[in-house]
Length: 110
Image (cartoon, rainbow, N blue to C red; front, side, top):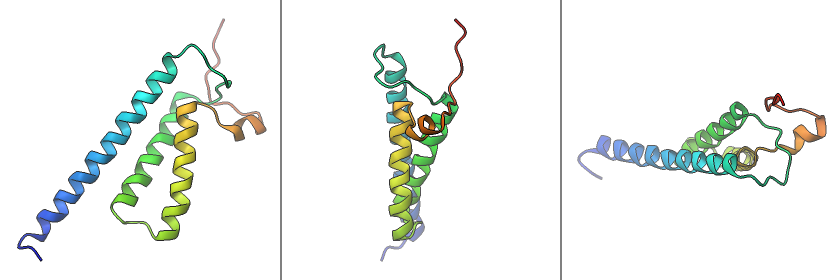
């Protein structure tokens, strides 16, 4: 037991913010690298806004998990969903969009 329990809570919150910031930085770096690459094996069907929303969702789930605000079952379910969202956001391709013929990507005028 410490004299300053609030200080420990603040320190834990700062570590969580630092970890979430690192996740955002890595996500932004991967998006920049994928957008800059010339070779794409799958036809992208996700727009930038869709990709960012999925990345933010994954970061929020990570923050909730790191702060122990999720129950064990919710952390597993949301964790799996967050990983799927993060992978599809980085790839810019959603298999379900392909099945239903959807695309959130802007049409380019040639």
